Image (cartoon, rainbow over all chains, first blue to last red; front, side, top):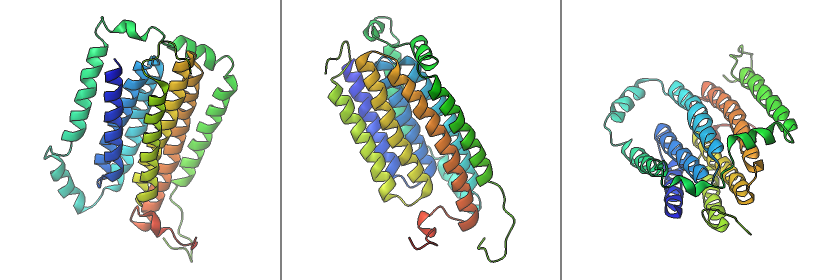
Length: 169
Length: 106
């Protein structure tokens, strides 16, 4: 089990390194998703299955889809066509797919019945929910206000402004 | 630090988080493309969240995961706002080069 943890850490660091030295935003995003999946698996091994699920569902799911949307939206013009053609080559997603396959193999190993007893000290979702809506109730309220502010701010920032004289468009 | 039933020594987890944070910091400092800076920021946030969950696992309580949920909310809000800024920057400058925003000569 510790070996699997260190393997996950290695995968996360390798993928993180690929994120910051990539040239294409889409490729970097693929590696970022690998980082998030590796960290989710590490959460699972640390006995935090709820955090692992949230990391996959919200982080690797919702937030990354948002980034994919924006990258695709900004990728217009003729250069995008040649890029799409290059993407079908398969060479690009080989790295992320390989790292993901290792993670998947680890997950399959962790789900074997013989290994499950290792996370006996797990803090499950019930405990997290009790803490969240007990002593941390104020935090939930703060989070809701934060999200509302972000919603209003994002709507305000992406409005199409009317052209004002003297302003560079 | 006493760690009952923890998989690894806590120092190794902290070392991993520090390495991940440093990689993200290097990305923020060296890249000039706004999208890449945003992704590096996500790496740093994940390193911080990992330390919270690790500490929660060491002490065997749920507080670490509660803070992780708060960081998740924060990351969602941050990404929404930052992507709005990215769209706005691209609309005005036709590029994502953050050095093009030097109008204030800062």
